[in-house]
Image (cartoon, rainbow, N blue to C red; front, top):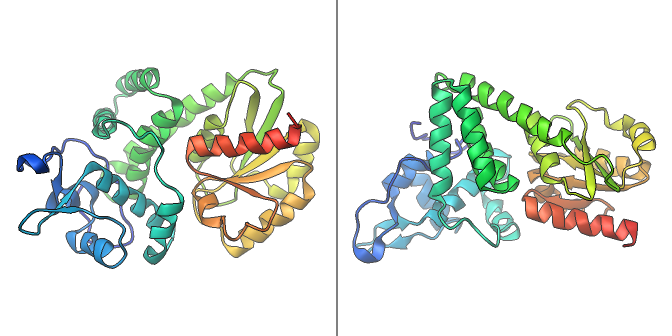
Length: 321
């Protein structure tokens, strides 16, 4: 992937073959700005602006004043890129980062995910589906579902989606997208039919892709509840009919992009028509917290652990248990 000089359409970084540059003993494991620019596709001018003007990253400095970035800094850059891709102004990103900190237990070796991504990329480049299947099985046997998808597969899927102008990336993305959708749908079908809780997950129209919706549904599954993921394109004004038949305890709407004012109003009107809890999940929920603060709609967030904690609390209040 060639570094981009644009400040808006950033590809998601995938930490693969890079190793820290050989430095003094007290700087081991750190990356100079030129290497970070190569890894992330963000040019050094932009990286410096994010630091000086907005305080989004805080690299270390050598005695001569050169910037050195840790893997934590690179992950912060990745999160900034994600917010910018969703239409958030760079001046507002710092507050959002503070409100949605990384997981309490980050992976001990972040580059481990990059190693898996590199192997997946190799399988995609050669269109080797048996190898992709083998890697998928190995990863699922090594990590929980939230790491499998939110830590490994989805960042690579997003990068390919955002760099489709690179020859071959569209074909690779289509292969990965179809492969993952099939595997996630299969896992959703294996849910226990007798669970006492039912949750419907449905897309906010035009604000997510099918794989993102399916993964959200999978990450919300638990032994005590079954999650029904409705198809992309589901009319929101017909949800009341579906809820009459399925009698869910909660409806979770999913959005990976920011909700406009019209979307927010539509969501609040919808909540008044349904006889169950209504929540919003995904990056759109992080962005809409302030706008929905005075409504009955709970914002679950986008990180798997947090989504489940908030949904569990909501369902516990409803069921009175």
